[in-house]
Image (cartoon, helix red, strand yellow):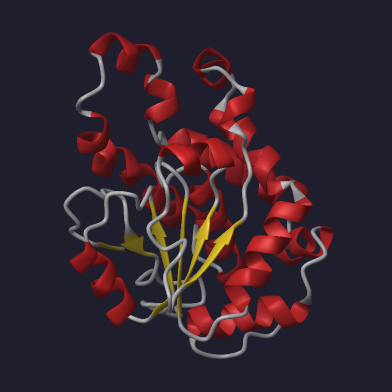
Length: 237
């Protein structure tokens, strides 16, 4: 897990470096997960391009993008895709705070159109793909967990990778009103039990994770390509 030390983007990290249950190394510089990129400096954008970023996938809805545009949206050399889920305009903060995050994650993971579109886009590029939402922990965390499940990263490591988001995001939310932060702390947090509950759901409903991907009509070719990118070889499906 390697976090990029950007000045105002706090949760941008390479998902590589983990060891799968079959002792294979998840390759670095394949997929990068992140929070909102709006405040990236030009030198930081150039740095990502130099590292081989070929495409950016933005999971945010129009209202979020209008408020904080993605700096790669009109980049001349890096492709930009907006694959949105979880329209915040449909919810008040009170609504979102009442919803258990684990239930929200399950709902996202069971959204066939969203998951299939993301995985097909991730698979189509030979070089690095960066994907992000606003905080880089919920929508981004679900997709990262699914990628890790595909290649066999142990659940305990998936939980640890999720849990660290809160630590990295502290500076992002430091300026918020204390009363507001306390009221919505569960929404901003990344508690290990939240990801554990989500993973338990996946493990119970889909004992073979390939059955999950089949239920979302994601082709074996797409899964093989992603596994090849992450593990450096074609895995047997």
